[in-house]
Amino acid sequence: GIPIKRYRAGDYFGEMAILLDQPRSADAVALTEVDLIAIDRNDFLAVLRGSEMLTRLERLVRVRDEGAWELFAKNSVLAALTSAQKTQLQMYLSPLQAGDTEVLWRAGDVPKNAYLVDDAIVTMHCPEGELKPFTSGAFLGEVDALRTGGHAPSSAFVTQTGKLFSIDRVDLTRFFEDNPGVYLSFLGARFVE
Image (tube, rainbow, N blue to C red; front, side):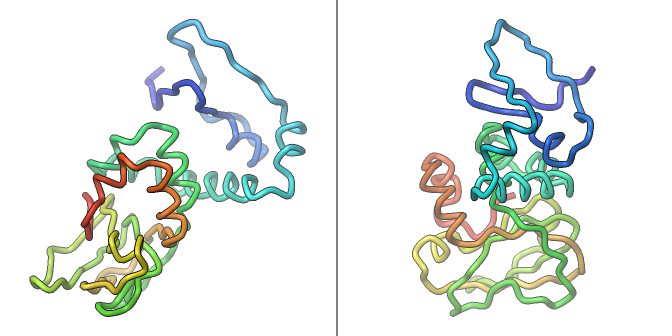
């Protein structure tokens, strides 16, 4: 078969099959000697029942089913994340269908979300002028304003109806606190492609 993902110590797989109650979508093959812990479906669900982690995993399954993993591959920074970092960030994403002219944030406002563009097109107005339209795989957000709760110097709006994934400022901040090296790649950014 064709390798899809590579896992390292601490990574996990099979959660989608359990949560969706469907057969697994791929085979896992060890390239080296490895120790694994197998957890059956009922024990897995019992441990997570009523926890925030179950909600996050359910969101992760939905987001992956909608193609977020493939979008990460189109982004130079997101593609370089480890599997664990990609999984963590995807747990915070929420799919969003956005219409033409929908405002994502306005200059002067405190932004609430950052966005990963799927099949929508987004235009950004900055103090320096209008930037080229952003398409599939672009990560957009006033990162400094999101982290500090400050005012956005730019505006962003949808110019072609389509799907985005949003991440709220609290979850984005949590992700950056857990991954300070990744935060450095976003420091001062409005977009990362």
